[in-house]
Figure (cartoon, one colour):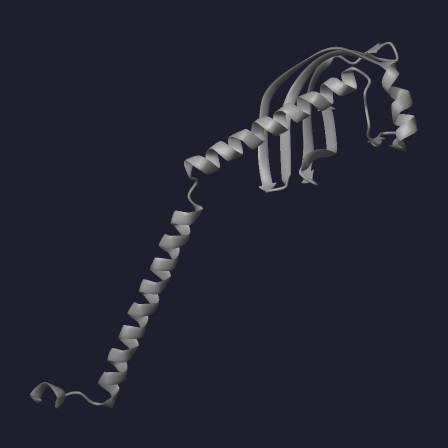
Length: 160
């Protein structure tokens, strides 16, 4: 009992405080380690993301091909303002797209049901008889609704 003689109320509280700090530090370290392990990309997640990227890239190419073939279903906004479906569809036959070549396609998934794709497309085309061929920077946003990917936003700008 000799070792308890030097223990007073303040030293016991100090020891208790040190132990509390150590427990808290261990708890935070454990929580950090566990969350890091679960957040680390697993091969299964990487494969799933790669599959989703391929699906979105394929859908983007299908949408571009549909426009080329004058099979369009969308509402547009351009320098002239909003176009309803009828006005947009009336403008489609004025385009003559002969070829599209895709490059630098990148897909990001801000959430499980949203994909943003950016790329460059080099196209050979005319609109109302005027040459519109060139390289364009393109961005599209796709959302997954009712188990189907749907194009909700598409924009392009001619490269300088």
